Amino acid sequence: MDTERHALIEEYPAEPRPSRPLMIVVSAPSGAGKSTLCNRLVAEFPAIAYSVSCTTRAPRGEERDGVDYYFLTKKEFRERIRQGEFLEYAKVHGNFYGTLEDTVLFAMESGRHVLLDIDVQGARQLRESLARLEPRHPIRRGFMDIFIEPPSLQELERRLRGRGTDEEKVIRRRLENAQVEMEAAKDYRFRLVNDEIEQAYRELKAIVLDAMGLG
Ligand code: ADP
Ligand code: 5GP
Image (cartoon, rainbow, N blue to C red; front, side):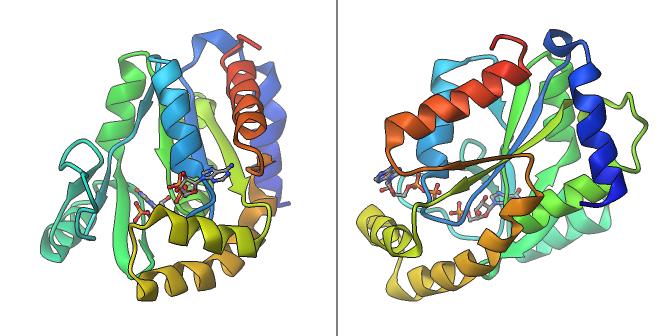
């Protein structure tokens, strides 16, 4: 563990917990059940809002622009990179994804906790940039990260196929990436295994409620 990250962890319990909006970063290999768990959390706790990301991938199923993602062309995405609008961005499974700084700050300034569903590269970038922010910056004060693991790679494959939203080629790519993503789990402060869904949800809720000062 590097020193800067350690410093962030050490200062965390000393904060006046209930008064600060959280920036909850959640990552998982695709298919681990992150959306299932996070959707449930957001539905149960209106004080937690999803940060809507930008992506260059095509909408899937019922996904809507401005709700699930801001769907951008590659040109539009590049322009936002050029303007320095992203808090973080990364190429994931062949498409670009990124979090706009304005989106996160707007939610936090309105007093809501913000939940970021981002990949391991994005989480790494965030940790690096946090260490450069003022200690009292809302993003630095509110940061917490959670990694959701599948019980096994075999089960991950079963879930990806069972979801029925991705082509075979996309599934293969996501499974290959999963092995690399799992290696990043050790960098997250909180980790949970999504084996049995109710148990996993209880664990996720306990982690977040504790950070909200409601545990
Ligand atoms: P992610 O957002 O991590 O890509 P999803 O939430 O879409 O994953 O879940 C992938 C599939 O696995 C979905 O069909 C979902 O219903 C299913 N799933 C999620 N959690 C569990 C679980 N604990 N046990 C069995 N199936 C699950
Ligand atoms: P999906 O295509 O299944 O919606 O998402 C694929 C992956 O992209 C997931 O691991 C998800 O966490 C990640 N992702 C979604 N939005 C962002 C983002 O804004 N930044 C980064 N770095 N990853 C994201």
